[in-house]
Image (cartoon, rainbow, N blue to C red; front, side, top):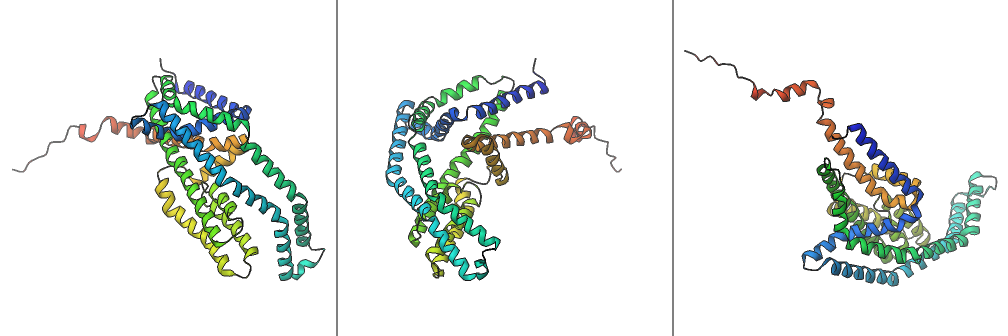
Amino acid sequence: MALSMRQQATYWGVAAVVLLLMLWLLDNVILPFVVGGAIAYFLDPLADRLERLGMSRTLATVAISLGMMLIAVMVVLAVIPTLVSQLTALINAAPEIFRRLQTFLLERFPDLQDETSTIRQTIVSIGETIQARGGALANGLLGSALSFINGIVFLVVVPVVSFYMLLDWDRMIARVDGWLPRDHAPVVRRLAGEIDAVLAAFVRGQLSVCVIMGVFYAVALGLTGLQFGMVVGAIAGAVTFIPYVGAVVGGALAVGLALFQFWGDWVSIGIVAGIFVLGQFLEGNVITPKLVGNSVGLHPVWLLFALSAFGALFGFLGLLVAVPVAASIGVLLRYGLRQYTDSVLYRGAASTLIIENPPEARTPAKVRTPK
């Protein structure tokens, strides 16, 4: 006998609570497996395409893994050293940048020279904090970045997990499909297909957008001669997946640096600002519609809420699972709304009577013909 709606809701609710507890209690342990699974998910379509070209699954997995390792080595050797050096220089230059800002403000706003002024005391306090903690912050950021990149977990566990999950991806999906409740398997498969379509359209497309915009900002700012242009471009590209945030954050940082470097050269400052205006226009009207599309169904406000909520609850692991969870919840909510609009609760009893006895099923009245 099929389970009642209340029993089904109870079982699925308990499963969701257990999953959230596992994420919360085992975040550091699960993290490399989540990253490895995400990599395997992204690369599975490429492996399927290689299989259709005649390769075995094992050979396709080995070829993809070697290619990804080669790309990673090239990025580390070509980009990471420059990025780290510019970030270090930017952090070390922060006290000098702030001193110049303070001088600039005092020259144009003489009232700030009043030592009893609240604004003056705030500026002095911020400057002392930056000068006292600038070096420690730089060392801490570099130490954290290097320990994260060179950590044994991400150098060993993640590649191994992604390799074996990519190798066995189709078998794992078939095994999970065999565990589905028989009464609900068709519905679960359809919802899983919708979730996969949303993730494929959003995550893979948005990653491409982030890379394209990051390269665009870095190259364009480099051509203008702006110092630390690569860092600004990387930051802007990394947060481009949040609508408007990449252009706003990167633009504010770039224009701020341009004001100190090109003060008086308003053409150069205008060019720096124009780069982000152009970038936002291209992203919103050309690149994102082409790569992501308009049928993803992830509203920017819902995405921002999911990132904030899961990031606060589960840290970095929460940021990784926020988009898949948001996509899944969105698909389930749309399915629930479809069920609701097709139900008697929404249509009412009168609509049920009309459906059971449609007009075409009624006996038509006799038409009196004229003599």
